[in-house]
Image 1 (cartoon, rainbow, N blue to C red):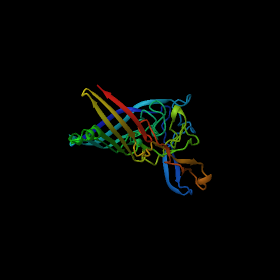
Image 2 (cartoon, rainbow, N blue to C red):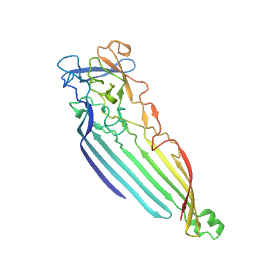
Image 3 (cartoon, rainbow, N blue to C red):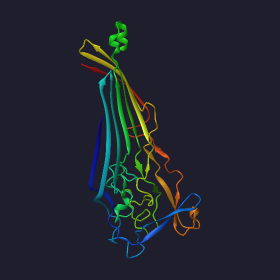
Image 4 (cartoon, helix red, strand yellow):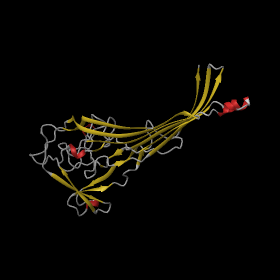
Amino acid sequence: MSATYLLSRGEYLPASYDANVAPTTLTKSYDVVNSAGVTQLVSTVPFYTALTPTFGRLNSTTGIILNQYSVVNSWYHGMVLTFRKPVGHDVEVLANYTLSRARDTGQISGGTNSMGNSGTFFGTDGVLDPYNLREDYANSDIDQRHRFVSSVVWTPSYAKKFSSRAARTLADGWSLSSIVSVGTGQPYSATIGTFTPPGSVNGGMTGAVVGTFASSTGGRAAWLPRNSYNLPRWTSVDFRIERAFTVRERYRFAILADAFNLLNNTIVSSVNSQGYTESNPGSGSCAGHANACLVPFPNFQSRTITSSSVFGARQLQIGARFNF
């Protein structure tokens, strides 16, 4: 058995946001309501607006300038517990459990990030305030708190002790192995449906959020930490059974059958992250409110994708291998 502690510190990692947003001292308040329109809390955020000549664009002759800055810092802490049983009594076992936490101030991952934006060079990661990135210090897009992976190989040798040649032929050469993987789901943020407040510079609650290809986006819910939700925990069991034959000591022929995700567990890789929709004051669920309202979206957290390039529905395959 062994235990390992891992520490990683990242500095000056990339983040993208609109470089043509002037500083502001204005704020804007939103009523966060339930489905009945009753206020649950009021969220007040900095508001970047073009309604006054004092604020708006740093360069008024152009619009969005989507730029990338090396301003993000990150921390990773991990503990890895390993158990290994070398081959003995026909069984070999290797198991690893990782307890970790990754946090940063809004780094954009290489693929589609928690805001649904396409990677490093397009869009932002829901930055609420480009002049105060510390507000976005939270769990990283790649944070995975728990992960367990174990492999077991059983190659029985008792058949060699059989006196009957026919019994040895039938029982010898078998091997069974399995890999069990269990992990917590990836984090994601609660977002707001496409939302451009009146007079805002761009989009989102603060008016400073930019989406993919410099398009307006609803951004994330400002009163909730970034990546405050997680996809469901997942389990995958892979299994192999193999039968080997030795021919004249120099040649070995094997027939094998593999099952990936043997139990056909549903592994959710994406959900609907839209948690709220915007409603104008006095309309719908926002009747009687002076502020704009953010109303819970009924399909929030509903499953959208249950497969990925690594995990999917149960798959079976049969193969053969010849060694010489």
